[in-house]
Amino acid sequence: MRIPLNSDSPHPLHKQISTYLQESIENGSILPGTKLPPRRELARNLGVARITVETAYAHLESRGLIQGLTGKGTFVLAIPRKTGRSLPKPSQQASTLWRGGGSFIDLAYGGGDPSLSPSHEFRKVLNSAWTNAPATAAKYLPPTGLMELRKAIQSYCGESGIMLPSSTPIITNGSQHALSLVFQTLASPGDVVMCENPTYAWLLRFLSQRDLHGHPLPSHSASPQEWYDAIQRSQPKFLYLVSDFTNPTGLTLPTETRQAVVSAAQKCGSWIVEDDYCAQLRYEGKTVPSYSALVRHQQTIYISSFSKILMPGLRLGFLTPPPQLFETLALQLELDLICAGSPLQLAMAQYLKEGYYRRHIRRLKTQYKKRRDAFLKTCEKVLPSSSQWTTPQGGLFLCLFLPEGTQVQDVVAHAAEEQIHITSGDAFFLQSPRPMLRMNFAAESQNRSCQALEILGEILRD
Ligand SMILES: Cc1ncc(COP(=O)(O)O)c(C=O)c1O
Image 1 (spheres, rainbow, N blue to C red):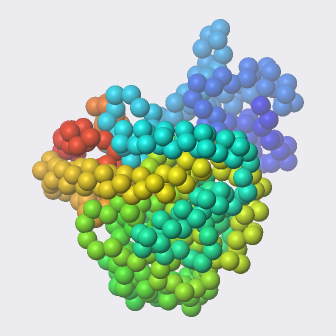
Image 2 (tube, rainbow, N blue to C red):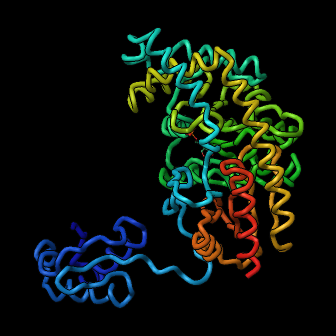
């Protein structure tokens, strides 16, 4: 174990060791259950007296962070749950994308219902990719992706009224990969990125990792003028905007506010990074134009993927940059991963061309609409009147806001005892977090999610 020590520091060496270990345990770099090096060995490696390490370990033990077991060694303990509202940094939050399975009812998941994935149809197109184009399926593709798929996406978007910025799409490993490519290529430390508060948690993790400054956009209830003014004040280099049914709130910004956003972005010369992760899952209400459709501006990048609608395991998405950025992004993608997987690109092209995707969306919308309606009705019936929730017109998520002062982590822990997986909404807030849970109303069957809501209602009333 390499612990940086500074003999000129005013802090004694045992303090430097215990602080380093404490921080590593608290930020998750050293996991619970890890066996720490024996005192004598660590002292030898660090070039300090054994008593120095013993003092450091004794301090950590007194804080309940480690425990010595006779004959076995010294082990890191699970960090005690803090009383009071705890706000883990976004980077320390467990991801809600990965789904562990088991008997838990999962209202925290970041995707759709895997049991509704069209595995039969997809197997067909995958088989035919191997049968009809075995050589293409087996080889590298250009970094921008399989031309057949790029064209199929273009015509699908054209037929569906999705206006893409001018160039043909570049195929990525999902939209997260596309976002990462864009910011890696265009952003420098210190740049300002405006986004909603709350917003997609991964973006916030990315901003803090890359030293980008997040500035919050106004709330949905603010007027278009307030949005315009806020953008003018921040002069952001980037505006990160989710097309519809924002993750986590599920809300959609009205057209007039989008127009204000676009005008402000044009005035400031900001890049608009539009993340359309599930706009096609609309269950009611009028469609609103995407930012890319409103803007006639060379600084818009539209990003989308097949994850939320088809299956995230495909890891297929795309971005459409303006022409001046096309080569740079293609080069960066080639450096990152050479190209997205060939058989899946072939299969996806056929899936789109045969009309399977359109039919799948129709089926999914019918199912998810029923689930959303039942979920909202059950919220009304079983949740205490002190809680409030958003009412999305589509998508997968809604936000459940709990009264100020609620210990959300305690609610999460209590729900886990009842075999319900929910997650605190802290990771979605750029600033001023409110007690919140992001609830997935689509990934579980109607019965299971309503049953979980009933139990949650009882927990919240306790
Ligand atoms: C708003 C938003 N954008 C992007 C992603 C990433 O999706 P993928 O990389 O699977 O396309 C997610 C996943 O949760 C999301 O919610």
